[in-house]
Length: 344
Image (cartoon, rainbow, N blue to C red; front, top):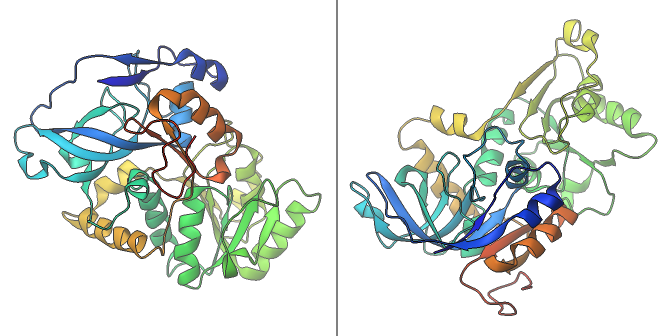
């Protein structure tokens, strides 16, 4: 099987990308509780970028194969996983030695989500991480807060969250870096502010006060965490679920914490999944898949690249993450269209 190999972790993402190459080795066989999946599509996520740079929450032994999620068909099962044989699945993994930027992928059966017949392949490849993150964050906000602040508002988690929150009548304050970034439509677009505008902080404070926005979802970190927390009403909370800035949390006024009774907490998807009751994850998966099938939720995809063109696709994604996901596919040839996203 062919796969992408990362030989070393490098903070400079351009150097890291250029260090990677396509390799080939015999396909591994699944062990007890595992399955082997023939990958059709695997996306590039911000977490993949952080992993390649060596600044994710953990590092795999090198050389390593990137890719935390994807979709494909189960072509071999280990002991106890026979029920998944031949099934289309959305899959994810963090701690296994392999990754989804590969023709085939070994993972635990518990990391596989069987797909409904009408679930589109492209959407299924991006299903295992962002939709569940957005769903979990939404349920931490639902029935507790009147309004929420989102940074990186053009990102996929923010877009999915906003679709859920808007339907529930929750007001949304969206923070963007570029005014022209597509962050949604209709009621979702009422309160959009650019973090680079001269009046950004006064506008943020005024909106947070008038809408009583007492919760913020932070995908950025760095000084943005403090910018949001400092300008929210007393008793507010910032939930940090990403670190796009690559910088430590900062600019936090101590008096806001002490006298404003404000808090900062983190969110980790794996911990949330581990907290669910038996069969609860399955029920949530079914509900979310139905929303994707009915197109109430969708992941924006800007392009699909053959696995061998990973470097070109990676650079396109880094240049404009807000334009949507990049998918890598081991089963397409350059120039062959497989659906609405443009082929490259």
